Amino acid sequence: GESVGLHLPTLSVQEGDNSIINCAYSNSASDYFIWYKQESGKGPQFIIDIRSNMDKRQGQRVTVLLNKTVKHLSLQIAATQPGDSAVYFCAETRAGNKLTFGGGTRVLVKP
Amino acid sequence: EAQVTQNPRYLITVTGKKLTVTCSQNMNHEYMSWYRQDPGLGLRQIYYSMNVEVTDKGDVPEGYKVSRKEKRNFPLILESPSPNQTSLYFCASSLLIRRRDRVDEQFFGPGTRLTVL
Image (cartoon, rainbow over all chains, first blue to last red; front, side, top):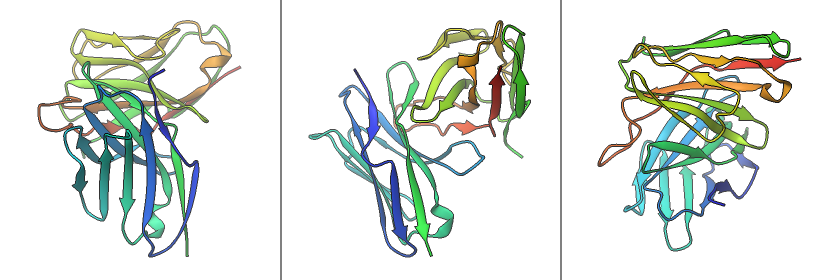
């Protein structure tokens, strides 16, 4: 069925290195893709979104890449910091304004 | 401070005892939504509301009710809770989930951990 999923459940990264979190989607009708960060004991927090007609979007220390050919989405975090340790979710939205979330990837930043 | 609040934050109850989880936002958002979060399943949408008196089912609405009598409040009602509704629940709000050129950020509440015995 239609889904938004993540390749890796856990990602360990050295502090200062770049992190790349991947996400696959199966529905070509998705028109926005969104990344959320969830820290322990808190609700998800919006990071960045990308419209389906774009390939790349940059924010503060984060870049989202969208490859529609292979239906793949990634979030790159530059110079990963201890505060980046969290679970990251990709989500997609289509007509009807409903969000569908992927299963999440846990990022662990090693000092 | 702009925020989404939920109450209670933690609740342990028994099967069949009706309960309500409240959600309130102070950002004048039209869109509000409820999600449940379960290990390995991520967040799944239960119900959402585009505006006052407008509610729609999400992916997992069975066993839940909602109401939107006021713009700021969106309570989640479990008329007869069952153990499979043990979960972490999040309320969220935004101006609109999708505009022509961008997505309006959804703001999430702190979560309500519900245990149904």
